[in-house]
Image (cartoon, rainbow over the protein chains, first blue to last red):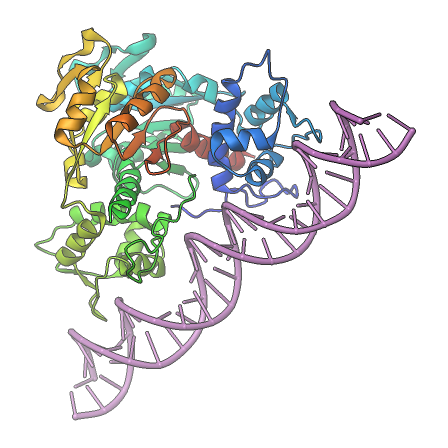
Length: 222
Length: 222
DNA sequence: CTATTATCGATATAAGTTTATCGATTGGAG
DNA sequence: CTCCAATCGATAAACTTATATCGATAATAG
């Protein structure tokens, strides 16, 4: 929705910009590879991946190409190497610390999901304005008072904030984050938040996906 | 990810197919309109919307055009009429019943989110295999044993299932849904599920969004 | 050893989406 | 009343993304 080019040839290096749809599919490939019986499958072809994931082999090949991996004709890609290449490309081997704002149901769902660690994200703690919610959260993560946020971000040099607060509070939390030096915000509140240009925001809008689903459904029913 | 055209001129009517990105933005516009002080703002222009939402006026105008609304030069669109046009277009005035599978943190987050009703979705109940989770859920919604699902779907003619179960269980739940006549699945499990062609699946993949966010962040840091 | 076939990688084409351009219309100022 | 500025709506151009084509390479069978 924010139409920044993902790679504006930033580093001076001549490198192809990465298409966002490709970027979104990479975790899907990774998850697929993770679920393969690696003791059995040493190599995997685009054709096979495409078939299992309902994509075209051409698209799979093009997506994987951007990770720099090279395959062998007639065989495909080394399963393990491919998985590592994706992890490397996505930066999942350099975990980022994140602070979660909001310990409602959604916040707790995010906090208790232990899969983020393997995606390079470590939620170090949550904060919530409601004293009743403070204390111990899932997976030994602490839920702290909102006032602790600023200190925590500065002390731990946290660069990512996850906003899972009610719509009305989203902008003020975002402002707080920016003032503490947060550089990326993952926003689950159904609100447009405004931040300086050097801060990246990723909106997670459930209503958008729902709209797509129900529109498809209604069109089929005609 | 599933590349069906959203509107394959289905009804015989000559109508433009709707672009998915447009479909995803419509709820954003709707939410924006909802938050306007309607007693003050009777009309709103594309320019204004675009500015507030960080989009281009041209794109806003094109998106809104597909709802069939007509604006007045120099004034813009009637705020109320626009909101209704979006709701109508997205079918939010004909709520769909849905059944939720899985009452973990994510499931409860979805169940307790009372905003879905205004998006045309009514989660009538949840089911969970774990007896400890069964009973009363948020907002007076019942959490029932998994075995009740089939009967409930058939009895209430439910067409939409929401899957918020662990990855390993996702496919078998999907199979159950299909066998009961479910026509649309909103899948929050990080697993590719396979269904017959006449069933619509919308994947909600948090890892994909996270990949986009962290990639943007790492590129900026270079 | 050679022929065959599956697969990759690169280039080219097509499809889809966004952005730009332009004329038409309307409200308000002079 | 006439002119000006803002806006819409439609069409065209630019850009992005997906799909198709083709030659090269490696495993396998004969």
